[in-house]
Image 1 (cartoon, rainbow, N blue to C red):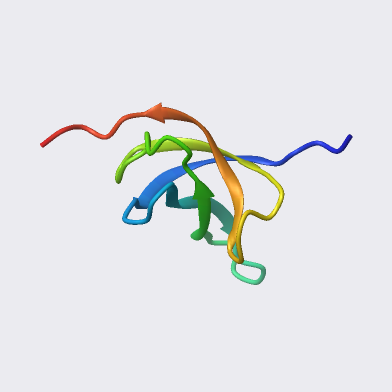
Image 2: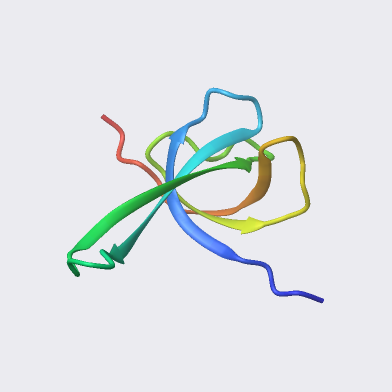
Length: 84
């Protein structure tokens, strides 16, 4: 059995039913100049019980394709966003 990839990111959108958009940030060094840059990737993730909302930090794991763009599942909510 293969090892599933896991990432941690911030929920950017929760407007869809049982789906959230998660932004995952990483740091890479520029190939020529060596300066560190922040790159962001967005993933559509399945949110079965609609427990994650905008601003929450969540852990996502790879899964089988659930739709055309959805290949990740929210495994847990790491931190809730502060209420304003």
